[in-house]
Image (cartoon, rainbow, N blue to C red; front, side, top):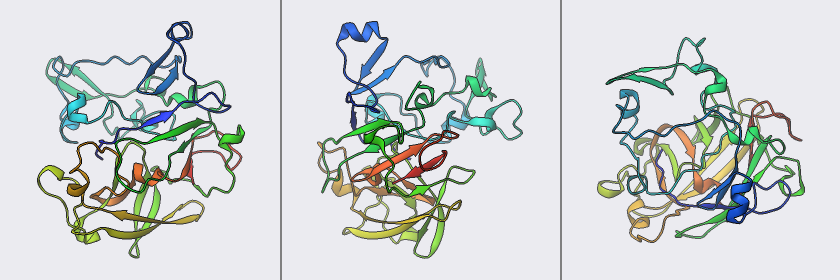
Length: 307
């Protein structure tokens, strides 16, 4: 997954919304911090300490994922807002009782790093699940845009079915499988798929499967078709059988990136072998619900996506 897009979710003072904007004095009094248009209450969660990468070695398992993106220049953004339905970032797989730790946490002594286990309460937590109310999920609302843009504004609404502005209404529910995926059917074949606000494009399959030319040079990692390609795929829940067809268009990344003032691309795509990563373009023009695992909602208990 590549992270490039810069976007801001508007924070509004309405029932169910994430938060409002406060004066500096109110920020201090209420222990609220505002950065890049996002707000967050101070919660009693495990403390995180950010350590300079030069002071400790980078585990080989982390290096294998891709190049380091540890500053604004290399990341291409001030931050990433990834929305998920799990309460912890790893879950039981990273606890001491797990026999197959995937390597989310490491313990380093001098230059030697090894995979470490973490109890559920010590893992990175989903802050939404820790709120006193409206903690059963969120709603992402982004407008539809016709072409590339320097920015896009939208809303992240706390809660599902707790206020008028987060009603589930007729949205189709997609519970994930045990791996946190849905199924995506493309050209008669089924693949694992998931929805991800933290990815700036549609990342799916490969050039051999899609017939879309991959980019070279500066746009490496994306698709560069000679002309726009109109595609269609169907998302299916293996748990309930619910389905929805998604129509989308892929435009050459080289063409899209030619304007240095644009950072939002509704038709940007790239390869992701054997998988459909429905990134930020999927959310544009949709009202997408993300229900927290184990939390009841008017539709059913999470986890699920709905749109």
